[in-house]
Length: 223
Image 1 (cartoon, helix red, strand yellow):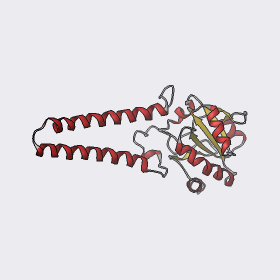
Image 2 (image 1 turned 90 degrees about the vertical axis):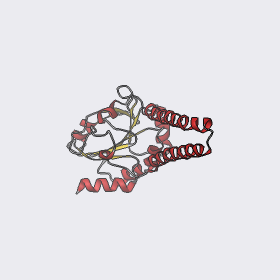
Image 3 (image 1 turned 135 degrees about the vertical axis):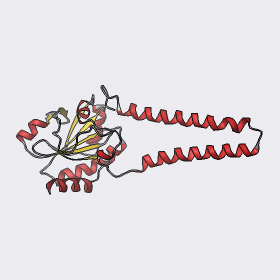
Image 4 (image 1 turned 30 degrees about the vertical axis):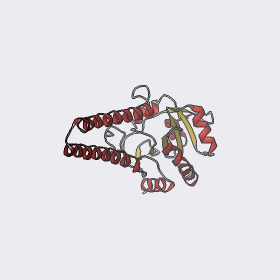
């Protein structure tokens, strides 16, 4: 799902949409044929009921996939078994940052020593845009944690325009080719990790987070 080795996120989502649409058309054709060719009113009604049932199932599947608004642990995401787990060493990375200084995880842990709240996002991702003011607020109330948001597979100009438009105060980095996100094997955006001062992943969240969610994650980490 990452560009280069895993493909672009938007392409992956578009591909799943096309597969769902083609599947729907196939099902529609399957049940439409007997409705047209059958001379029996009884058979027509059976076909019509079946067709309505199929579209009801499709609608339910779509609504259920869009209904989740709370962050879920990556362990609960199908196919996410290979993602870095709590207790794994966080992959080192270097990214260019909005202020032009750059950020290297290993250097930060060595020189600064604060734990890291790492957020993967993109300007084209609505949940990412929705959560960023909350992440910004949390970064101000948790000065003992380094917050960094890395824009994945995004046009840097679009990333900068959005981050500056809402006056983001924490570090913004750029992962144009998705190489950093690949190392963390994330399954979608947004995704967040808490990395301890010794470089170990201690918590993760998949999906948009609120300031309260971040407070709770950091509280678990501190306990």
